[in-house]
Image 1: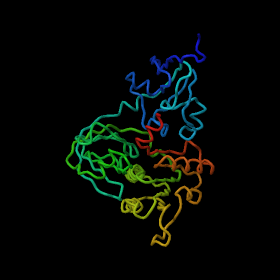
Image 2: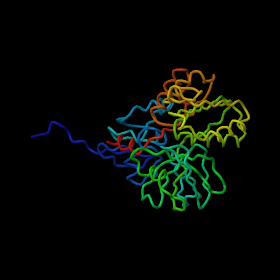
Image 3: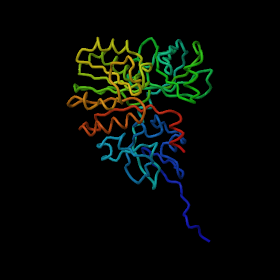
Image 4: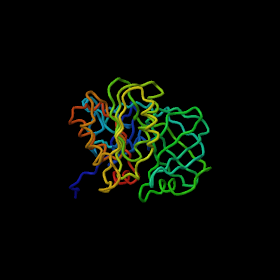
Length: 344
């Protein structure tokens, strides 16, 4: 007796002409990595555009809405996210593999841990050799005593010839790696760093910039701004920083130094969403996204970094105010729990 349900067969994906077998329910990215292709990727959950590729032939099932990540121009040209695409037919795709060619693995050691807030630690590393990256990019880090696991964190400073780098690590509830960074003494421990990765960096231009950070999302924003100062950028800039309470504010001295060194107009506004009524706080209250319309300048380009819910809300508002998708650049800070949930 024949089954009522046809058995799904593997499909073939031709990646830059190279055939790869994609098993049922397997994403294009999973298949490519399994076959040893150095495919560019980052979050694996559709939260960035690192695995963007062009679908030349065939059809795919998209596991999540990609309109938040890909620009209208990308969508019109047939671009998809490999991590969210399951082939429905044999497919042909084209992808730029050159970005991964610049990724290196560098050894080093922990030289500092500084508590910035009750749940964010600045992790300072000395690399055995300097690593060239664009301010705003990130790296995968593993620490000797924390096991073989690695986690992704954005550089909190621009690239330096002395090989010193730092990261802001927020302690995620139940997160083994981030808890170790925040609670254990790791100075002197050997580390391995793989990078640089990601496509979050300052694009050239003269348009005003609106930068929005939430939580540890300040790391790539600060690096981006410090790098811009070094490059002599003078375009108007507004930085909105969303936090819960006053105790969650940090790096204010660094931001003040940026403001003083910026060659053009620079405005900084922290916004607290859960600060107790009647406290000493005299600044803005509410969600940081509620300040966008007030602070958005005509023709501005947006740079967003923080939790996905903030990124999505900000993107909706910006698009509603007329900012084109190509002028919105975002770095979603997903957790390992996000990755597991998306894969289940």
